[in-house]
Amino acid sequence: MVEPRSISVSPDRWLTDSRVYNLIWLGRWLERADNIARVINTFARIAVESGADMLALQQSLGNAAAIRGIRVEDAGQSLEMLLRYHEASSIYHSLHTARSNATHVGTVELIRAISETVMTLERDGAMPASPLEALLLTNEVLERLDAVYKVIDDSWFHQEALSEEEVYRRFVQQ
Image 1 (spheres, rainbow, N blue to C red):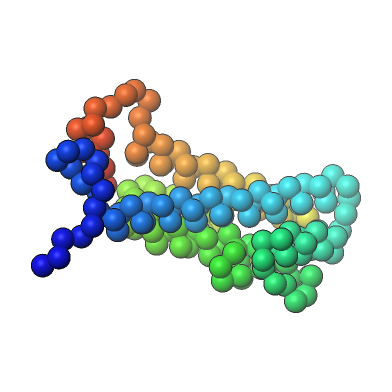
Image 2: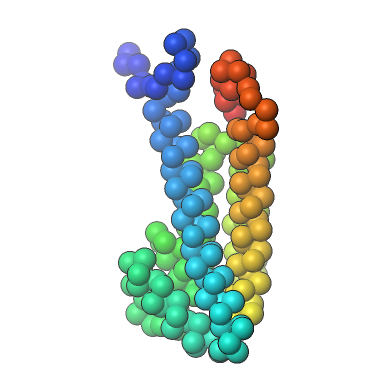
């Protein structure tokens, strides 16, 4: 039998490469979802403050999508693509994939927090019809992502310094 590759946490403790892989990708997918939500939020806030309509927001987001390498045929679909429908670069896909990675390394609370964020985007299946609705939706997504980060902090990090043994014990419990 071949032993899995692993990383030494301490001289007598190891972290397998599959757990490391899932931790890294969990962070990357959460970061991507957060980044896309902030881009949409920023453009929606500018549109609301300037009194722009949905078409102007869609065009701005089309440029943002192009920068991210997302090809949008119809500029009127850029918000939908960034929120839900692009298979690799939407908030929805990023969170869905992060949740999958969390099932391998995260606590139940973390999986639940990510799932609540996903459900925010699934609610009613309706897309925002105005820049204000887009702003409100992304505000809610960002608040839920903050809750995800709080769960991560509470689960894996601690305010006081922990011994290596305590860090390992808590990680193994996950």
